[in-house]
Image 1 (cartoon, rainbow, N blue to C red):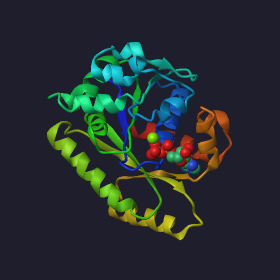
Image 2: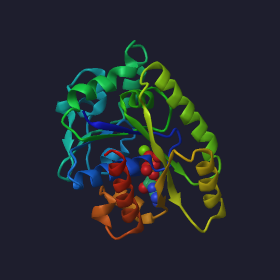
Image 3: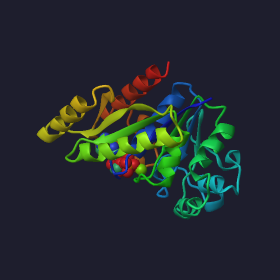
Image 4: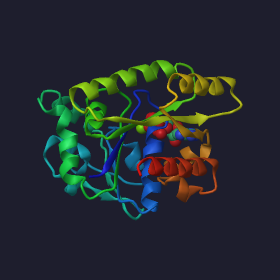
Length: 253
Ligand SMILES: Nc1ncnc2c1ncn2[C@@H]1O[C@H](COP(=O)(O)OP(=O)(O)O)[C@@H](O)[C@H]1O
Ligand SMILES: [Mg+2]
């Protein structure tokens, strides 16, 4: 059974997609068989790997039951990495799932049958705590929460932790915290340093050691449809994501 990690934060622009894409790529390079599930209607994880789907060939179709998971998978240009691509029709799929009694378990069922052959599954979530992220938490073994080192990070975190508790109670009691990941860190900003101290002192066991620095190369790479290790392997962003990959792979042993 694949180790399934949901990348969740209800805020947009905090580094979820960058983290999901680069972790999936680096774990594949480390010879793990990986699946990246793009649950965001904006499909940035899909385009960030230079891929594209249509409505009937996206994860939305699989969630709606109109295509088996195997049929919608795309091969990334990285050996060992497959992508269940996102598409803007996921907005409608999410709305239609609301009326189904088993809506929270749909992704889990898909991955239980179609995700068996992977070592790792990463789920990139849209910026909400709605049905799609909830279903990702139901399907996952653990949650990775990227947070931007800025004011109000703690408030947002409280909401996510409450949702995680709720998921544990109603559907997935063994859901674990993979960790809180500080992203876009700029050591010259005093408040960045303060946020890390505040969050780490409240949740000392839940913060990852690796800190992702602010690095323009990470956004350039995404706009060229490339992972950072291909676009600029010597960049600080690449080095940080390599370190994070080591930390995540070690935690799973
Ligand atoms: N560490 C970083 N340094 C600089 N830019 C980053 C970094 N991480 C992400 N970005 C850029 O910031 C924007 C938001 O990141 P993204 O991963 O898409 O966030 P989310 O998925 O949470 O909305 C994107 O343009 C991305 O390329
Ligand atoms: Mg995103």
